[in-house]
Image 1 (cartoon, one colour):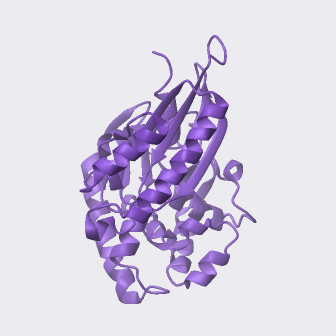
Image 2 (cartoon, helix red, strand yellow):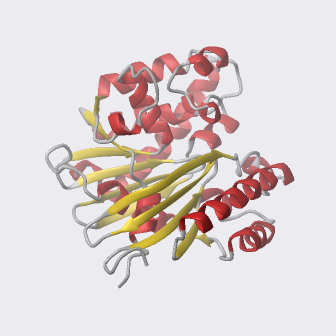
Length: 312
């Protein structure tokens, strides 16, 4: 025990593009970070075409798990939950992934549904969020590598849906050029717009008073819009970018060659290849709901997982 009313927990979120660790002390009213780490492992690389995890992707993911296990032991976390999302739901060699994680961390990954992923993302994104910046009801969107979650709610989710559009999936499916051709961009946009329209209708997103965006595609677009000299989570948390900012950054990213994207000071190396697809998804959402702005959250599904580990 860290203290009589405090529990140290560890949350791992393994998505299509990245695997992330949060070790935090859980208090009655919130979380205090101890460690946050992210590794780009591309677990879902090629899954859209093959239906299975590649050996190389599993090796990268297991190496990150080994490193995370050492960090968890060093910090003395009492509770651990490992959540796996989009890429892990339907692959043919899922058992190899589950067994490899259990061997290294002593827990089996919870391969969660899109609905649970959405609920956890909503909980994490809205924990401690300033109601003045993001009045309820809110539309929370979590743009991942393989899927995007849409959640509408106030203190708790009212409705949610997960759709199979994400920055990795759209890049592999459509955006092969360097930079992508106009035809490739148009094909991706048709795919994205159709999924976004379906999701917005399903959750009643137009009744929301504010739009909250989270995950790496959103925060990277925001960092570019804010012209940050380097990626700064504290500057990004709770920042607000306009709809025009989103459109301008997206239009620039889809026409940039890879070398220019890689040279941007806020760009994580693991996002260079997929950021244009993620930005296009965000732009489509902004346009579809008629939002004037996006409130940016650095807190997301990881925080929701950790918060869910608090004592009953």
